[in-house]
Length: 349
Image 1 (cartoon, rainbow, N blue to C red):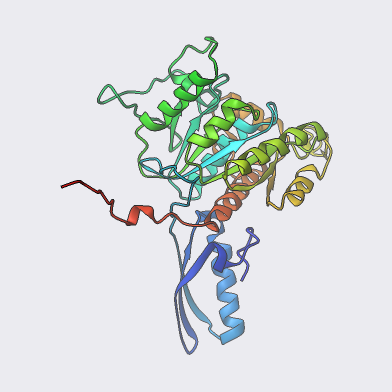
Image 2 (tube, rainbow, N blue to C red):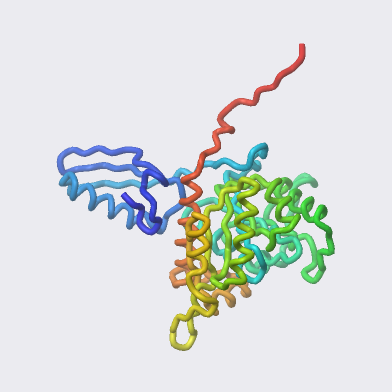
């Protein structure tokens, strides 16, 4: 059975935890490995129809639960305390809407029922505080060594933008940027996160490579536009993650079509099919195609991203479907069982 809207069999992204059939009565308990509150009704309806068709069951009780587990990261790196999975949202170049996509994906995952945080790793151009409407706030510390993340729309949030003035340029070399990011990651008191979305800096230079090697990442998402110039750099970004053994969960094609505010006409201003072709070339999934919509810009500038501002409108629904597919793809990867094993310490006597 294919999970509706996901395109993968239930056995790949979850399991039937319990099934009993007694005449026309049936009881089913489904366990999904990713948050999918928006798909539960469609999934349960599909299961009822299947049991009725195959077994004649007309009284079917279906209960769907979610179990999000930690997945493997790069070799020799340990998972971050308080975080099950780190997902890097990256692009080969700037200007493709990576930060807007990262914020809305994080909010979409939270809306689907996950515990989510977001780290603004774009040290030179932090924009997450403005997008989430918390630019004027500052993090607190209980012990003088660690920072408490800020809260915005149910997300745990950290950014260098909270620690500097808005107009202060970060004139730092690569090692200083790397150290700042590691400090924000390690010294922020993340609490029981299923996912920590990391908004990576654009590009594929020394900073990006170093961060990819030092941050325990479960998977990466590449954001691009359909334009050939953007795709050239997006391909480099994808290859960078593969070189450091970070699984690429898929490609998100942003600004896929422009929606006219006057007549509603859709037009592919930046070309069409580029994201799908890139996904096919590298054998990864096309997770979603997001519109170029004036409301997305207005809402993020106003500190209330689309998933929050208009949750039932087209842009928000596109983000939520993309987030589900991203999380489902991660659920298909190897799980990290290291936390279940005791630590072994060898001492000389």
